[in-house]
Every structure is written in structure tokens, then in C-alpha cells.
Image (tube, rainbow, N blue to C red):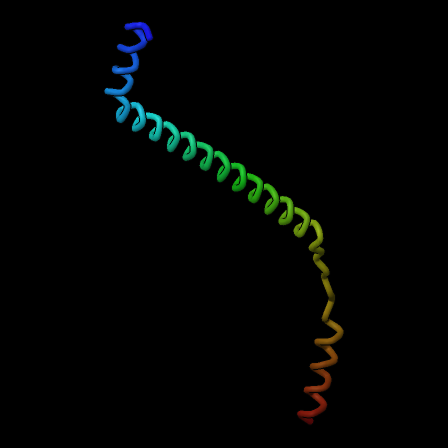
Length: 84
């Protein structure tokens, strides 16, 4: 081995703990960033699907108006007949 390679190896060996610590920190940072991106994507998809379901359920709802005045009159007639 040349002297240059030997010096480089010694330098790397002396800083090995520092280098390993830095690599572990970067790996943890990368994993955390990837997890955050995945959580954001899943949350966005869930929110979108929920919005579509709510929109389709709102479209299915129909409002029906009923005139119950005839029933009210009938019930009043029944009450007046029983009171007599």
C-alpha cells in the first residue's frame, strides 16, 4: 500500500465512530422523512375518499314535503266526537 492510502486508512479509522454516528443520524432522518411522507399521503387519500363518500351521500338525500292538514283535521274531529 502506498503511504497515501495508509494515511487515509488511519484517518478513517480514527474518525470511524464519528462517521458511524453521522451515518446513523442520516439514516434515521431519511426514515423519519419517508414515514412522514407516507403518513401524509395516507391522510390525504383518506380525506379525499371521505369527502367523496360524503358528497355521494348528500346527493342521495331527498327532502319530501307532506301536507298533513287532512290528518290534523281528522284527529280534531275524532277528539271533538269523543268530547261530546
